Image (tube, rainbow over all chains, first blue to last red; front, side):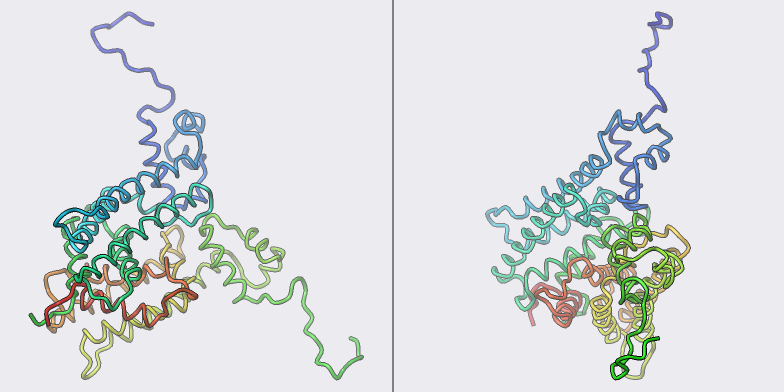
Length: 209
Length: 209
């Protein structure tokens, strides 16, 4: 309750090391989960990584599972928004166009949320939180397969590969980028999205026009 | 040392539960590593899973890391053989043809060795064994990118996507099948290989002939 130096704004009082709020703890947790595996990482490991005490972490989050849930929601909320928008019928916009769009926008989400999407893609269903995430992933897969089927039905895509398989392969290719994409690497997200749509829709082989 | 019932072949004497040799222990270990994560799995967990004592397991393997090494070698030896064969120049067989061949044969390896390839694709480099596996993966990636570049150079593939990026996407699509392929599911390996080569080389969009 000092009254000296009132010209300067009083610094907020903090305990322990300053600078950690819930988003910062979440970022560090996602990074650690991706490096060591979620099941092999303890809240003690996370505290050590951050140079905090465990009570200091529990001031911001209730459990390791809450951190996992927040991370998976971060990835799933973005992907759900993209897929929901692409699934919405719009006058004058065919399914094929919306499919190309969802591929491009998924690449943007994967690049912007690479750590949380990486974690999402490694979820194996070992807890309630993971099972709920797998359920949301299944919904996305089903919507994407339905969109491929629509694009086949409107005559834009070849019909000799099952739509569900096409959807697996297309998004298998998109999802692979969490494994190899580097923000400081040779490719920007636009280049990657262009390459994926070129490979998947136009094919790599040179076609006779 | 009973001499009775000599007409029947004498059963081999075993201690503990019968039926476990090193390959069987390795299969169980790979399955457990894939479900829980390698770092989160202990030799005690593996013993419990198998209904064996830890000493009974150590009769067959020296360490958890040896099991990981054997699993990664199982996947890498097969993939290396496929890529080495595809990289070998042969009279009358162009790079494009060899690239299509390596895609098909990779699908076969992934299906036949799905558990060990799944483990390989999740390796993060947390130990000497994992770093050695990542080094071998890099060699495979480099050879595949070189093969794509050769196919571009011979004029068979479009030249507006960088060969290293094409290789990432192509094998990102192939590798994705460890996540969703089920041996008892709707697709057999030939169908998956056909679909991948169709998508990647010919493209999904209907082309004017």
